[in-house]
Structure formats: C-alpha cells, structure tokens
Length: 98
Image (cartoon, rainbow, N blue to C red; front, side):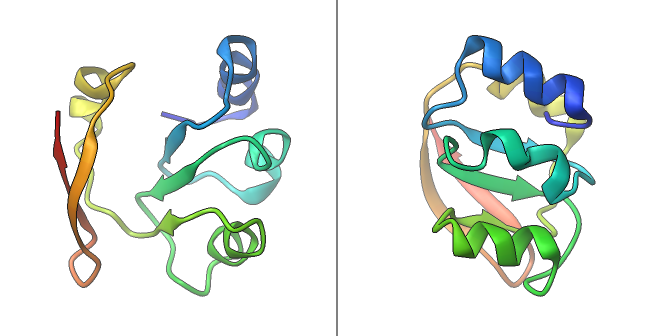
C-alpha cells in the first residue's frame, strides 16, 4: 500500500518494475518516481477524471479508481502473484485468483 513518499522509496529499493500498486489517497506527485516502472494502479479514491487517472492513461498504465479495498486485507496480498479474473468497474471491485 502506497500512502506516502517513503513508501515509494521503499518500493524503489525492492524494485517497482511490473508491480501493481495499491494507493488510498495518493497523488501523482507521490507516485512520480515509479510511474514509468509500475504495471498498474489501484486507487481507493478518485474517478476517471482524477489527475492520477489522467496521468496513468498518458503513461499507458491501467488505473482502477474508487475501488473498494479492505485495507486490512492488504498484507494477505503482499508479494503474491495472482490473476485478475474480472473487474466490476461500476462498483469499483476487482476479483483475483491465485
């Protein structure tokens, strides 16, 4: 979960390449150092007109905005590889399969 610049630096240390990042309320400025490396963005706030969504589109990075994500479940996903089975963009939900 990316919440601040320190989280971005930590991700840079371990390698941001091909990662899908989950952010709660993080702006484009915070994600700037890793935008060219990440594979996608899942954000719990914002809309398709949000600055993060627009910049992600310009970087050709898929971005899902206003996704309902239980933050307490984040640790269970950390480091796992999975496949997105389906996306309910109307309700902001992603369904994963390990």
